Image 1 (tube, one colour):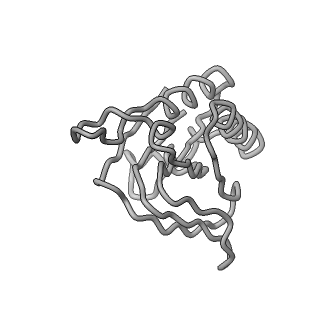
Image 2 (cartoon, one colour):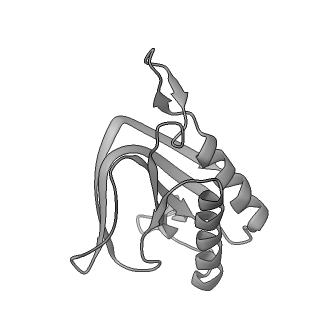
Length: 145
């Protein structure tokens, strides 16, 4: 399981021109599910994301979590995080989990984040999503478990 976690200001997610989700500020989390990933990894990833201290405190140090600052999370499914382009120029996605299992784990991560008290918005699994985000910092963390 791999996540690209970005600290963001206002962020929008649209499908076919229709607004699906938006957050005023917080984290945009792009989530890739690898073949063989399980609920234990999903729980660990949700715990890490909810506690990740990448927001600045009053002294300008990254010392606060998304919940500490009252931010929200936009969780976006992203199978292309497991694209392998080491051979040739066209990526292979053989490491990415099959859609049915990946969607179940994606929804499970969202559920676990919500259980930690966070507001979590989601995209549409498997859809052609258009995301407009205003990166803050920029701060981007890649986490793989």
